[in-house]
Image 1 (spheres, rainbow, N blue to C red):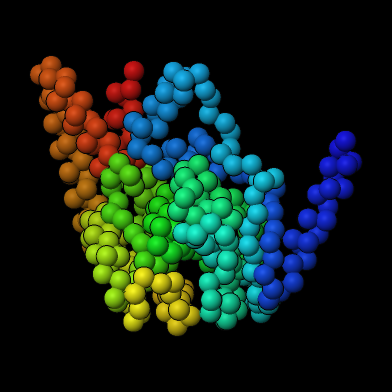
Image 2: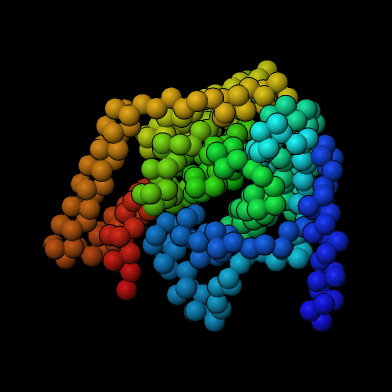
Length: 333
């Protein structure tokens, strides 16, 4: 039985290892990672109180959380590998689509060749699929499997998406700055520091603030998404993410063209321009606000105002996410 399984998987492994440069391939992966586990996804994408409540809610339904949310033996990915690079190292772009069928957007291949970027995108990862149950773990698994099979520079791994896929890409960049060094947000974004897009743990937030880059690429005539971008960018800056650039091609709600895509990669790969004084002041303001909110929460507890304390705790949990994890988790029975 074991020999039969090995023989079954061998052609796939050989095909992946020898994928022809400059061609599109449909591939499967087999390697899982703790970073895509349900436990890790919950800790990064949910607020602390919400994540802590998951086991209890599942137990009430007589269910248990599985180790991994997807079965890789049933998943396929579209892979494009450019010609080998003079440096010997590739970059990597993980793309989250809004559509169900994985495909390489028109005009992107030449740009990928120019920048030496591998492209990978999961099938059945469109807007009709769940973010936490499929789209996010599929993107993480794609990154991990490609990075293990090809010589990829760790500082040249990015995530991108279009429309609804861009909103998922933004969440991935925020929650996994240890995997993705930046994101191209093509016509879709959201504010952060909410119950839907919580702030990550302090070490991840610091990494996101200091090393991640966000490139917002939205058509100048895409009025709805431009307004979304404006709200998202204000939110990012309020959370001390200043490595932001906007690119506005002359288009409506369409996938970005090759020219704007190349500009986005230029921005992602340019040397970082840090603002240490501004960053320190911004972080201090956040710490002061959190400290004030926690002080108010303790005062309500001491005064026996249970309902008001519970309401404020939920508000703190939603706004500060992982930054308030210790305080919020201490309130879980």
